Length: 486
Image (cartoon, rainbow, N blue to C red; front, side, top):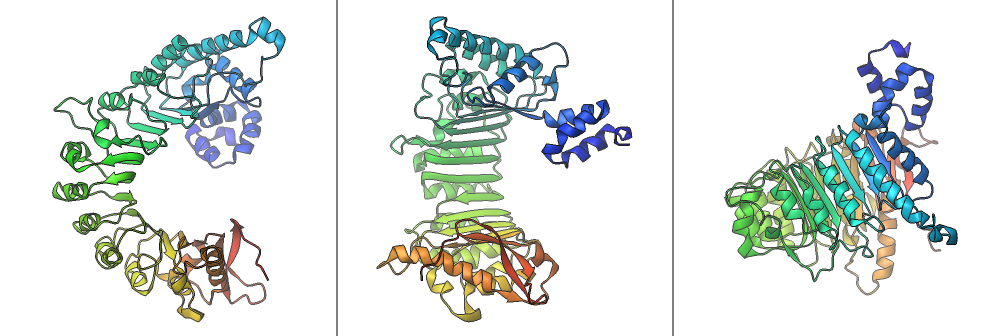
């Protein structure tokens, strides 16, 4: 009966079926196989470095280079793990070295890859994970990268180059071939080709750069755009920068024109000049999503200058003054109360940035919240009875009709610094106890769908076995629940 359904409906059904059942369905009949194959092959991984996946990866490359029943037209995302080499121990015995078998296998892999690439006519996303070249010849890699960059539908490049054993400085030019990309993600060692790729991608929509290089190697954000023509401005709408980047004041005027289309901004970098937030406000660049590890007054002034944020993550370190917390809860948050859906406030020290009665009243105005993550310090969680802030927050869950997840994190640094080790150990347990002992009757329908999370566990609302009319938050998953000492 299933084989008589339209192919579009079959694909929708198969997209909801568990992956383990796909093979059985494909073997059921030809029409089911024809419908489910495009779904299975949308994302494909090649891992030649693993003994477990080497043979399967070789078979896939052969199929992609074949002229018969070639599955390449279905592949939209290709992930290549590590290098293009065989597993480290494969073909390394004495006889293999004598006959240079390993080198011949590497050459065969080079040919298989080059033969496979022309069939990837629908490929949109290329991902390199733990990238390095190892034994692949420079000329072969140069040809491979050039071929990949010419694929007609390719618009996404992801490169994760974490390894310090394979420096990128000798491999930078291989990526300069890429052009007309809409989505660029590079994590680990940054490559010099980034400005050239940006310059050749006028329709760039998302740029994510996460540098894991030593903090002594600082990069100005302006260095990302020097290859652009004088009259050209970057069109990026979603920008993520993490690691050893800086935004010094002299560069702000030149950087701002490239950010006029921003809707999402994530800056977890070494230094941000206050002039940057002032410039965003003056140029009326109002982002809808913001993640930043900065709580300066200039940032808060920028957030007060408009409304409409849907997601905000604010990471506050110990150097931020308490007055900034009052301004955030009482002035910033109400400006965005009607649109805020996801809010994360993470403080490295106790005080007003942690949730209390005042912040809770402001949060209750954000009726469209879907995710809320706040920090609890010892002073506010230590109140006995219903007056503690954890119980009070749980008691107000009914007002958030769209809430999916609420997280309580314990403050890493506590006010009692005489014995910080004990404090760090007891705070998560105390929050866990407060969540577990919370009880209510006749919860609203939305409360049954809310997941609560602490540093130690996840919880869902359920009725007590001995008292079906009383509901409490029961542990569904334990992160690192510690045994209590007597």
